[in-house]
Amino acid sequence: MTIRRILSYPHKVLRSKAEVVPEITDEIREIWQDMIDTMEAMPGIGLAAPQIGVGLRLAVVDASRERGKAIRMANPEVLYASVEMAMGEEASPCLPGVSARIERPRAVTVRFLNEAGMWDRKELVMQWARSAQHQIDHLEGRLYVDHLSRTKKEMLVKKARI
Image 1 (cartoon, rainbow, N blue to C red):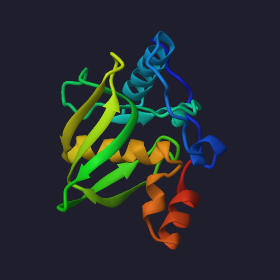
Image 2: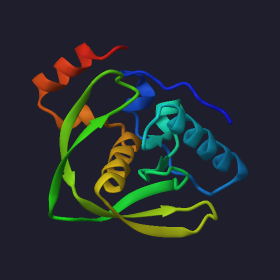
Image 3: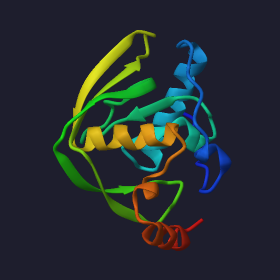
Image 4: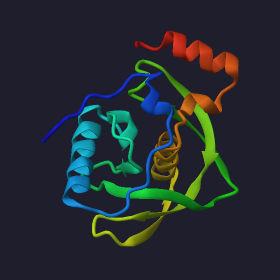
């Protein structure tokens, strides 16, 4: 079990687009496991590789109550998003101590390379969908605060314990 250090905003890795993962290797599987261990220690329901300083398009999501159901995703992309929107509270360990209500599609279909190196797709709803979208934002160099007005974003960044 390896718990990695989370980068703090405004670290440049958090603002950079992550690199495509060409294939699933044992090293990629180890990074995923470290990400899950780190996510569980926070505790959180998702983590993107840039948050631990790894500039690869890797994410994990586990919004289950009992835990242990993490979806490991490489190169995730949203194929379909519902027209129905949902408001929900979001936070990030990169900006500790603050959160905000963000509107996102209630459901998404996500395509990704799975642990076996095969293309997979999952239909995700509610917290699962919110977390997947949040992690994909991280892979694009965006944080949840980028969905807020400039004033609200500046207020939260100033208030964060970084």
